Image 1 (tube, rainbow, N blue to C red):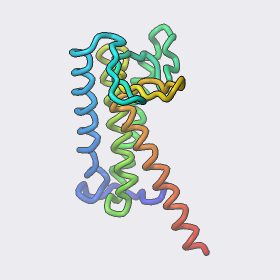
Image 2: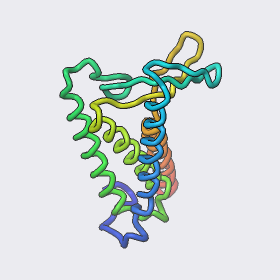
Image 3: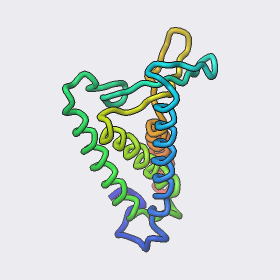
Length: 174
């Protein structure tokens, strides 16, 4: 088992304390997406900064539009992946001692919130609403959303936690 994982702890001590963060990500993601759909037309663009636009786009695929040209089966694949990954991370959170592993628990909650936020879009319409567009000169990064940002920040938190954990193990072994 990964470090910090044990049998299920009392709820107040477990990583479940971080589930409200996942819920907040889901709500924020859905509220902003609904606002974008209501107030923007497809591909309507507003320049916020020289390197940042707000633009309404839809993605039937995954990150970087992977599988976006598939015939529709990918919708259910991504829904099942989101459910499976989220369920696994929720079990991990339940067994995680939050006080000792706050960064890890926070990262897991961010990933759960992001995965479920995008899953809601897929269930509702078969596509994900994207609207944040970063670019520099002729280099354009694919548009993304609040859920994607939460997944990215959550993954970074997991990497930082793993790096810190490996450093502490090396110090103990030395």
